[in-house]
Image 1 (spheres, rainbow, N blue to C red):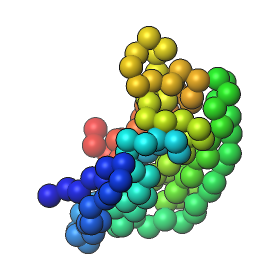
Image 2 (cartoon, rainbow, N blue to C red; image 1 turned 45 degrees about the vertical axis):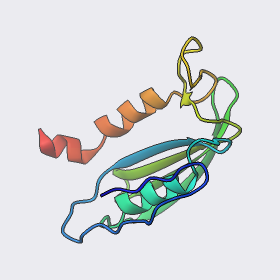
Image 3 (cartoon, one colour; image 1 turned 180 degrees about the vertical axis):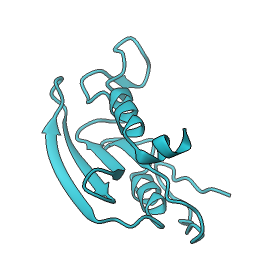
Image 4 (tube, rainbow, N blue to C red; image 1 turned 135 degrees about the vertical axis):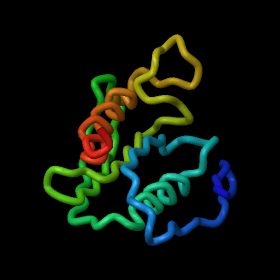
Amino acid sequence: MEYWATARSSGPQRTLKRDIAPVPTIVFHGDADKTVHSINNKQVISQSMSNAPIAQSIVEHGRSAGGISYTREVWRQTALHIHSEHWLLHGVGHAWSGGSASGSYTDPLGPDASLEMIRFFLSNPMRQNAM
């Protein structure tokens, strides 16, 4: 059973069993999102890292080409292996970051979430081990 938060509440956080492999995770969330509660971000990242040996955490601040400022937190298992990323998009509501202006629930001004997810998953060592 999984629990997900709504705009006004959240369910209890689950702890993963110790014998489950860590899951590489990337999360994007707007800090002005009134639909999905921000605690979801913390719970998803926390659960994904519960069995991961994290060697380093880095916080970066940036701005997309469209002008949206963001904070990107990265958790590394080694110098070359990023385990998890959390992108907090400042001033962005409930929208797909970098999406088409003609779409619904999209923000074309934000960082390109699709491109960043492709980069993240293609560069992850777990992908190479599965092939």
